[in-house]
Picture 1 (cartoon, rainbow, N blue to C red):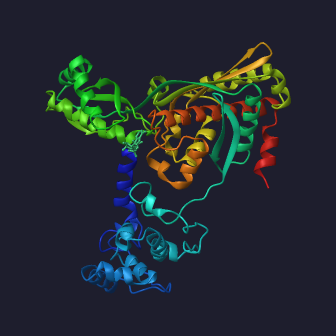
Picture 2 (cartoon, protein in one colour):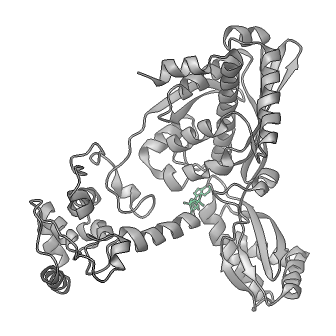
Picture 3 (cartoon, rainbow, N blue to C red):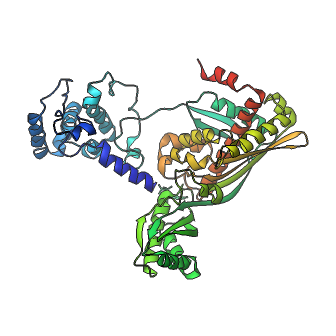
Length: 489
Ligand code: ADP
């Protein structure tokens, strides 16, 4: 979340927002560096070119200096406010604060964007486009989920199931535009239910944040590591970390030294939150405790030093786990494999060995020992307000299949499912409805963390169903046929 916040600020500051006194309309970065480049072209509300060059510059400066009072702007028509926006008198990002009406701010922003030369000179009209903007609760978005909002992106949401997960039937919501994905997962659910359902095991639950800190030299970095590894040092950072949250409970702080730099991977329980914000707060305090503990010379290069590792492929998440580590298993009767999945146990076991184990090994995969875990993970993430970028580690999965008697035993091992049921996108109404569908919305008051853990178990179970069905389709040679049926009109 911190990384996301920093990224958002960078984007906001550098790319999306017109500089003060500029409309942001006009030349590309290349032509900006050319002193002979043409002045920006402004377009007024009628879509006609407005005055450009020195005249426009003067009028913009005048507007900026003599910008009307905020309440006067609020009383203007949307078009008039948009004109001020296009002239740079009202920054694009400030519309919500200025207008004090989030829905109106979105409407006006679409008008401002439409006046930018790159849009107005094209055949595309944002205002008249299919990107919807009405009927959305923007108040929840503001300051939490998105900036510079121009609407919302509707996606189809399907359900697979109900799937029997640890003795409870649950519908799995999937937001996707990939035809056949939900149908295929649903088929997997049917086959799994016929064998009694999925059994899951939570192996670990801890989010991580790995800052990079620098010392004078290796000797000093080693002293810091020794202190961190000592009972006294660890207790000091643990107390500091835990003081920042009702839920955060530090579990470990393993570290490595590279030259003069120390990378510390803090790991903590984060209740029902996915936990990145919680981790960032706690780690900041823990590092302050290190300084107080005798390391005043420590320089914090970055609160996130990629030793976390968040949203990047990394072996450490595969080996050590991140978020929830889950194993899930189901047994499918041999006759169900034949009737529902149109293949047989021996063929499936051989296909899984060759494709998901040997094939992935040949490809040098880290955590990619599966057919399409990312498909199910990402569809559930989008439907339930998870951070879709965390599909990188969350989709790491090892799928195994064994013949037991006449039946198929299938399992998935997923060591880094990064999910939460509070915070982030889970505060939005539609996403909450999908968490409600599975009975995992919000904070589990009697047992903090219980909702997020159950969600992770459901994600792994959905992946199990997806793996079973896709591998069966490949084994039966029906993959192309079913995609043609579900993917092509
Ligand atoms: P994240 O840490 O995943 O980025 P947020 O910081 O957005 O999430 O949300 C966590 C917030 O929710 C914290 O302020 C925390 O105190 C609050 N909270 C309420 N109930 C819970 C719970 N059961 N588990 C974790 N956090 C909770």
